[in-house]
Amino acid sequence: MPVTYKEFAESYLEFNIPPFADTLAKTDSVFGKTNGKLTTMQVNVGYACNFSCTHCFLESSPERTEIMSKQTMEDCLTVFAENGFETLDITGGAPELNPHLEWFIEEGVKLGKVMVRSNAALLTTPAYQHLIEVFRYNEVTVVVSLPCYTKENVDSQRGTDNFEKVIAGIEALNAVGYGTDPVLELNLVYNPLGGFLPGSQCGLEADYRRILGEEHNIAFNNLFCLANTPMGRFRTMLESKGELGEYLTLIYENYNPDTLPSMMCRNQLNVDYDGGLYDCEMNHVIGLPINDKYHRISDLKGHKLEQRDIRLNGGCYVCTAGSGSSCGGALV
Ligand code: SF4
Ligand code: SF4
Image 1 (cartoon, helix red, strand yellow):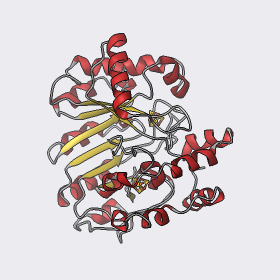
Image 2 (tube, rainbow, N blue to C red):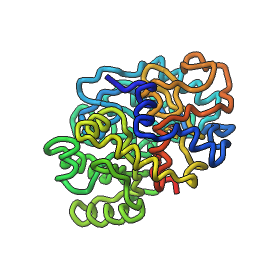
Image 3 (cartoon, protein in one colour):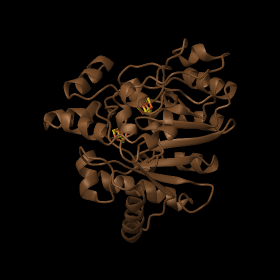
Image 4 (cartoon, helix red, strand yellow):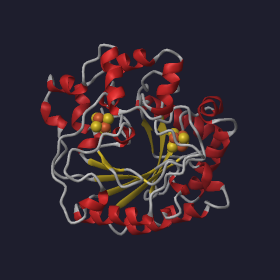
């Protein structure tokens, strides 16, 4: 069962950690609001995934059946155009498993930049390998999660032999120009293997580039470092080791107000597979909808999004710890 907002908030109090809004108020309350104009619409097109990673806060897996309908995608595109969004950020689960992905990309690029978050492993399988050409033709930015550059560490998070599958997918993307052609951007995503914060993004990117280059001849543009979110499977893992309090305390004690101007939710709207509207994926996991009179993408059609208060919560300590964390990596 996913943790509810109430349970999530209580777990911070249990470890004497103040609500994030109180911590923020000591710094500057202006960062509790979205910017006037949002730039990124992040759309979760389904929870089904070919992997069941131990750190997955969405608890995606091959058993999940939630999938975004084509009608909801159409609603997303209408709201995207009406509100002048610039980037359509498509995520999952594994987005490849939504049968309307190709159509969504083709319609999305008529309106702005399109980005797809993938684990790349499906891209070498007969049913999905055509998507590489769809990505290339439409100049989609591809973001591939690869939690480490070693087989041992990746397989410990994702299951035996999954490192090779992801590497094969990245090699297939490289083969059509991803990571070397200036219009075909390929970014990788790192997250820690346990209850600690990412190290320096710059240093890790250099390590990834050297080791993946030497051992697999892989090219990529940027490495994004993301901190783990204490929800879903990662929370279950922390609880089973008795480390939840330690991790919540770690992210609280590393609160860094310099990250506030770049918090991703200030420029973003997140749309869940069923059309629900949230500030970010974390907020949809704990069931905290946006602070607006409209909570569904279908209801938003014909209306302009207004500046709103962000639904701050304990998850915000993840985004603001250390160098900060967002879907685009470190913030400072
Ligand atoms: S972390 Fe990504 S690849 Fe792993 S189960 Fe979750 S959605 Fe799938
Ligand atoms: S969890 Fe992060 S992205 Fe979500 S509302 Fe808080 S600061 Fe924003």
